[in-house]
Image 1 (cartoon, one colour):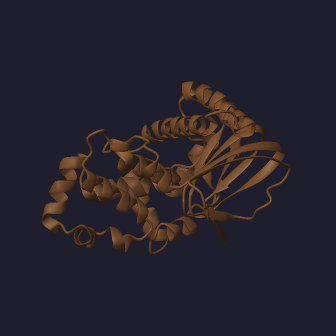
Image 2: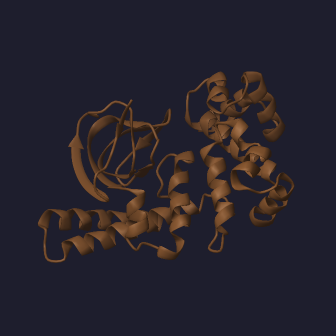
Length: 281
């Protein structure tokens, strides 16, 4: 699979396409994709979502994605690196929090603009960025950077509303590191055991449990369990993956193990859950 790099801190591209010129690929940077015109499907990490004008997606490093274009589509791409986040002066006192928010959107794929007011705000910003990028007027670079920064903050606000309540203005740095570690390794059960996490962060296993519950207001085990349930639920609702494939992708030993885990947490087996939600949809 092709993996693309970005050799500047941010890049702006607009394209009108009748078909996606690339197979599934991933990036070494963040990419905001705004749909200006057209319809089709966004494919990301084996999930597919219909897109329409006004939808915006955030592709994070390591995500595997492509587009199935149904009608001629005009895309706006804003690509930026983690270095840009750190050096742009953007939200300087909360850079770590912003990185955490952006990195973890990959676990909640789909259009990231949940707030209707923000949807109305983003379109004129996209239009202004394109206009400045094309016209190359006086101070256009500075103005583009301000617009890019504003757009990133708007996106982060929409994502943050759907992240755990543990991420707040005064969230301690180490607990955010632990949360990010869990999200990164949620597909590798051996790496999210309490002993492994305590070794990784230099905290005794007995203290880790107390520390996590104090700052996250939930036990470490319950947090991991709830997070895995959310991932299973999302795949059942939004993908056609078989139960065995979901089990494999999330590090369960087999389909039976996932069935028992899901039924204990949700009160029904995965197939029943999928059937209910498909019927309601």
